[in-house]
Length: 190
Image 1: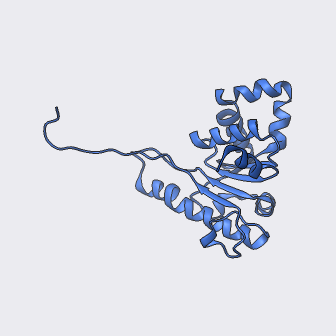
Image 2: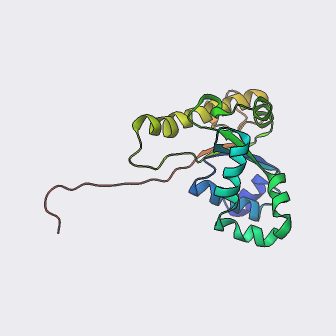
């Protein structure tokens, strides 16, 4: 798919992004806000206990980063209103059912409006406890797929993987990850 067709596809779409403070998610969100200002809205899932904490993490760990410098320069004083219009922080945690989203009205709004789901959430800590890594990297993906199935039942066009779709009217579901490989050799190394 060429960049032009991707930008055209994302025009007037509502996008739900997990792992919003991670490397890949920040790059994606910044790029789309910069090159496709006609994107309808982003819902960004941030690991937080409440909406206030999620908004603080969005400000400090996403929008406040150097990566968003070009957008700051482009929008100047109106950046905050542009971000408020286009980005909604969502308090939650991918390792829980319903992604830990407790605000039922926000959840209903998202479930109705989201066109595309991008799952960037993961732990890349190689010393992470197995239960934590399993909850985020494996069960988290399952929770996102369950969310997509719920969305399918509420909309004509759904954001889930086609083979798992209840209604077979999918838009897109993407799971992105950073891969890491490490080999071990025994014996003397030259």
